Figure 1: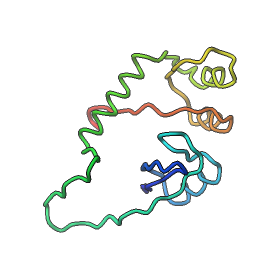
Figure 2: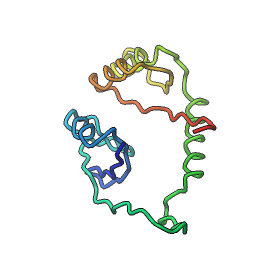
Figure 3: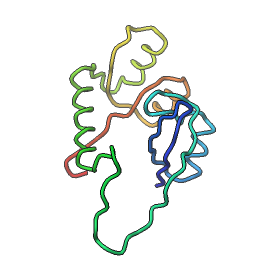
Length: 140
């Protein structure tokens, strides 16, 4: 796995993980790398500081505005809970329902459910916007 700091044309910065550098290049070429904040498809790698291993056990202070892992997991749990409270659960019909909403065959509404890899790939090909719902089991 490789993590890249990315930046959209609007100046939003975010991090994303990819299987390897080739996976990033392939997804970028297909136009499926988009800004996590505004959805802009004009995304490029942002300058990154190298990750240098430390030999001591001292913990560096977090950069201003950067949440620690526990706070970040809590934020993701809150996001997941809000989606599940406010959106309709459509189960394994997620891809079908997302397409209906995208192509205005159904009223727009928040939905969540399950989709196979092939269904996800099909949604991407059709230009349907969606985000994965984070899975934050207590053992993760």
